[in-house]
Image 1: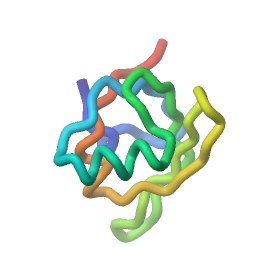
Image 2 (image 1 turned 120 degrees about the vertical axis):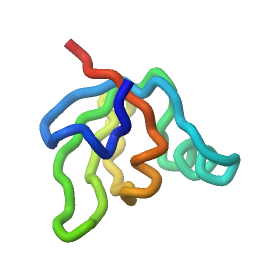
Image 3 (image 1 turned 90 degrees about the vertical axis):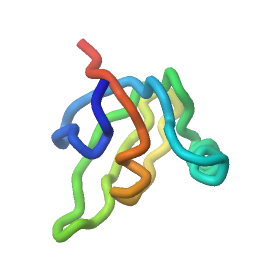
Length: 78
């Protein structure tokens, strides 16, 4: 498993686990991200900016800060 922060843009991955406290998990649920969803990294903001992702399961696009992205564990989809 990898952290979402280590995945290069254009890669499609599946969310395995969301580590962190209840607040982090609730925020991710509000963004429409759940374990088992397939997401694609659209781009990564420069100078420590956010990751722009698309949830291929629901069609939602969102920006996620790097601190939160470190807590999302994923595996590549083949």
